[in-house]
Image (tube, rainbow, N blue to C red; front, side):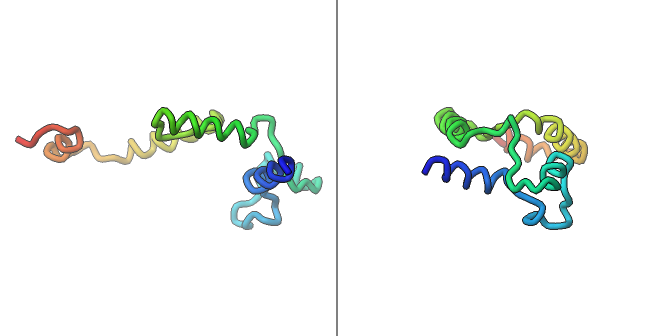
Length: 107
């Protein structure tokens, strides 16, 4: 039963094949060779077992952590996205709103 459960979890999370992917998203290089060879479930060495992911979730809940990031491979993409968000923010700010957001009493 454990093998069936794990394969179902992996199948839903990591086994998306070209037949299930909307055409507008195309096929990424990481999956292309495997899919052309007829693979229906593509595994990566960095994939976590469900129990390992569960341990990360448990730790985050116990430590009141807001985020659970499982793979550092996404760091550069996250940094670029957040840099773009910061760059798009105007420099002019409302001092009263800033004071409220920082928990300072109004003057």
